[in-house]
Image 1 (cartoon, rainbow, N blue to C red):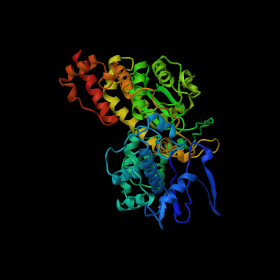
Image 2: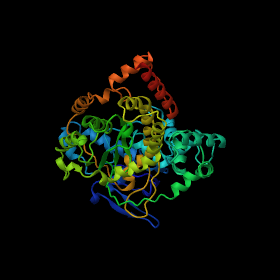
Image 3: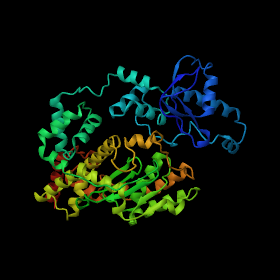
Image 4: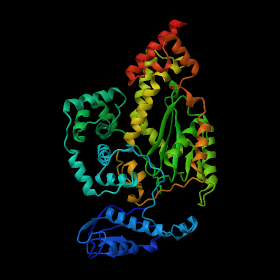
Length: 508
């Protein structure tokens, strides 16, 4: 666990304005002041107070992260003195709370080995607040930095949020381009978020709202009429329950989608397009990749009774059988109707508005123009060859935009609101805890499982196409597969599709 962010008063008198969360409530005492009530751990406060003078903090205002860093060094030194004892004894002698236990053993580094200034620039450009940035740098990159330092670095980098630095004509041009390439169903808030975080455009929400009303009044009116009634949903923290399901709205055109979402944070864990989502090994490969990336096991896996979920169900049960909680083993998988899988169905409703509708209209227009015959296997192979890379890029963009957008507070219900990435990585800020579990085996076993399910046919397909079709394209185009062009938008994909179909028809 970690302390929340804040600032302390003069440590010569007392340590105030602090909030710490620990595993055992009996070790937390109340400390009252006229205007504030805070949690303080007696051991933490006493230790920090005794070492303030040694750390030369006397007479200064100390940020809570500085106190945490000091306490971390003190506890680390105490643990090193007991290094001669066995690991089992050392674990038993640790206190029942911890200030340095990470939420997850493996954390993806969003920007690799970039310096602290580039980290701050990256998170700031994604729309995170100063406290969110401070939390990411602490929890994900294990770097301690104060809020004041972050604000100073942001100012030195010339990063602003309120000033619109982009030219209005450029903004209008970019919005028109996005609407022609699959973003026509975005509302002004979703469009504003995408522009500022994905396109490098600095513009206010009000300007985006006015531009959309001017260039697409019909779409604005249609979005205003959409009212969706949702059921209440309660989750205790990240990895409490992970929802998995397939999405078949583009299946008539040869493309299937599979995804997963965390129930607490609403963070999209994976969103993959391919030739099928019904092959159990393909679904298992997605699940194993997620486990390898996170380094933890979810408490509960929610899926339907389809045969494509047989392997992930067995993997989850096998890995969770060695834990001691009430949901271990077979109870760690929840099987039910796909329509009752609430979280993932909610995601599909948003995906339909922001992604699916555009591609369904594109393919239906091709059918109406007699360009595409979706009953012909060769045509479907060609659709995957030309459009699958574009669709996967579109899905990746949707996933990234979704994971950094701010979820509004609900009028009814007990769901927390915030940014999915922040909710997922920093649940303690919202009174929740990470509900994941350690692996009962080493990573080598998981890698063996991963290799087993990476040998499927679909995982080795180029652009989701069979080897016979790739050879056919090489033959009719007189070009090696390494030199095949990769379209970047729907228009280029359609041109490439028409060219390949024409060559195939001439060949036969």
